Amino acid sequence: MAVVPATLARRAMQPAAALRGASLAYLGVMVVVPMLAMTWQAVEPGPRAFWAAVSEPYAWHALKLTFVTAFIMVLVGAVTGTATAWVLVRYEFPGRNLVNALIDLPFAVPTVVTGVMLVALYGPESVVGAIAGKAGWKVIYDQPGIILALLFVTYPFVIRSVQPVLLSLDRAEEEAAATLGAGPFTTFLRVTLPTLWPSILTGSALSFSRALGEYGSVVMVAGNQPLLTKTAPIYVFGEIESGNRHGALAVSAVLLASSLLILVVLNALQRRGEVRDAS
Amino acid sequence: MRADEGDGADAGASPTEPDRPTLARAVDLPLEGRDAPSSWGRRLLIGAVLLWFAALILIPGLALARQAFAGGARPLIAALAEPGVQRAFAMSLGITLVATLVNTVFGIAMALVLVRQRFFGRSLVDGVVDMPFAVSPIVAGLMLIVLYGPDSAIGGWLESRGFQVAYALPGMILATMFVTVPFVVRELVPILREMGEEYEQAAHTLGAGRWRTFRSVTLPSIRWGVAYGVTLTVARCLGEFGAVLVVSGNVIGRTQTATLYIAEGIESFHPEGAYAASLVLAASSFLLLVGMDLLRARLERTREVEP
Image (spheres, rainbow over the protein chains, first blue to last red):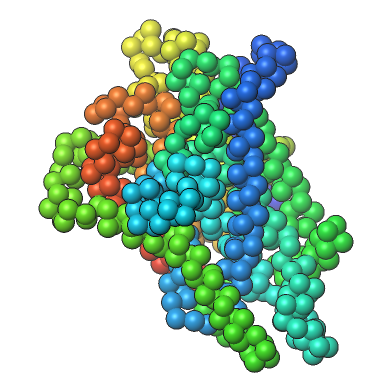
């Protein structure tokens, strides 16, 4: 076969010209056009109208609630996720493989079903909910319920991001620290944690981005009480239903921009090699 | 904090994994040297982690099963036999089938293009593929209403020709397709990259056409990756709620999927059907998860065999 490698390479590229056109067209029609259309309609009435729609008290409260609950979830999730990854990688205990296999369950369970599950266990009519109610705690149909739902749906992110790093970690440094007299906690804080930081950050950023948009589980668990449990996605849905198109679009644009910003920053950090790729 | 991140960068960048490490290998990790001083602390930590897992994931699932079986198995079966439930599940399955088929074909094509081609704007396209992950389902639904709603240019034109997208089945399929665009692509890109082009070029040299090369060289090497991506897509399609809710108009019996049926059942205070349907969906997601786990083991094995 007298084929020059260059020609061969070009021939190997050829098929994909049509393939590229088709897949880019699909991506454009499915993803890019809807996003641009929505963004355009959101900003078209001008910055003043946009600001008015976002700063309207109900919209503002919804956005604030979304960001605050997502932030609290991230703080809890970073600690529990790192601890879970640590325990799963480092320790042997009965049921370890089962737990490890079930970590991804929240990715597979529909968000509505998540909500139904959490209400079944922690709702006011359940045993746990009744005990908590007597102690004066309200979880379901209140703000703690939102955080609980967010913790459920984002449960795998930090764990799955930290686990591979922990696995490939060279233990020599930890052993050196231990030999030099550092206790286990000091060793973790000074030697292990700095290595894990980027992966914890990656998992947390993905969790936060996911939490900003979460709807199904939150609406089932917390309802849509204005100024109490109405998060931004619930607000957007309410405004669509009641015909306030621009109010819905403006808040949507804020959510979209925040999520994209998180992903872009994360991507840039990954390019620079500071944060490892979670996927 | 900045200093910490700097340290982390150096150390974090070096142990990049050539392939996804399995937990089986983790068992071989030496555990000695940290036993005596921390043994009670360790037990406490394991206990806390397991308790958190149980309280957040495991026991809510069991609580759902208890609710669904509250009146025994017979009412559960009766609730599932209702025509409303069956229509809702049929609709979910139909939407899942279409969206999964389309996005699998697209996913394979897009991954091939992203890995095997150099073109202007490639990294931008790579980012665009991930965008549905960053979009709230409700916002995704709103996007489709903006574009295809009755008062939009495209939607108006289509409607004048008797074709309704928003508040009808086509819109629900579009919404499901939108949220599941990235799954297959994301699964295949690293596999294709790792595989390299040598085998495909060898096939070319031996005179195989493009389609033949794809069918007998590329596809067999990526099939477990495709299967994994398809499983993720199916799980997400079956469970999609927000996006479908916005574009469906939720006409009971006509545009109601399984998840919409559940939400409606809970809100209208006749939750028996909702609990039963939830249990079925939870069980299917559990099965999908088991499938994913088996596929992952399979993927690891293929990677270890192939250089």
